[in-house]
Amino acid sequence: GQQVMQIPQYQHVQEGEDFTTYCNSSTTLSNIQWYKQRPGGHPVFLIQLVKSGEVKKQKRLTFQFGEAKKNSSLHITATQTTDVGTYFCAGPGNAGGTSYGKLTFGQGTILTVHP
Amino acid sequence: GAVVSQHPSWVICKSGTSVKIECRSLDFQATTMFWYRQFPKQSLMLMATSNEGSKATYEQGVEKDKFLINHASLTLSTLTVTSAHPEDSSFYICSRGQGEYTEAFFGQGTRLTVV
Image (cartoon, rainbow over all chains, first blue to last red; front, side, top):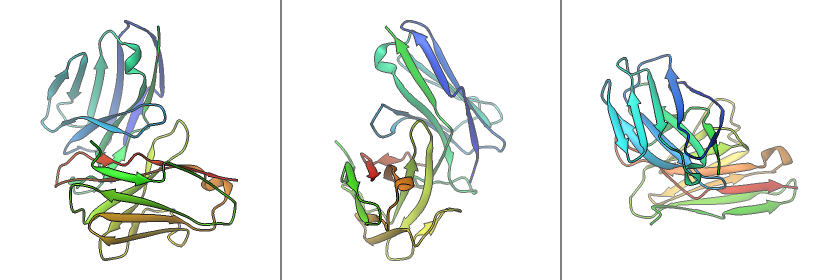
């Protein structure tokens, strides 16, 4: 499967500040997905990016997929305390690119928001 | 509502005993399901792929005799941690997909503590 690196590992912000987490793969990804895991909870799907250079927005969240389909980022504008959690990127878990739900996760970024 | 149900949510067992965790796909007949393990503040690591009606496929480094997986029906996969030891204490979580390029749907996870 693919290997996906994610940074930073931790991010502490004041409420209202922006936040960005980055993912990078050494190989081209057919797609990349983003998940959020609240403390004590399970990962919840946020979005999937498939096209080269794709940018998608969900309210204050902006997701980007690089032109080479090797990197991706998640940016949160004006963080709120409800944004607290761990954000994971995930690539397909099969070398061929398809996944059928099998994923290789990045290390995750733990976001703390101070009110 | 949840499409993957996992039980129990938490379990405490004595060292040397076995623990069974159930994962049910509630709305989809899943020929394949996945089991992950997550240590505190770490990422989700794929342990094995559960295949309905056939043997599970284990990731490198995962002991198949210790982590027994059974996928006897299209809606149920079970993970049994045999002869559990304190180092097996972790968050175990199952998931399934729904197609070739698909998001993963996760169960609620099981927090196992071996004392």
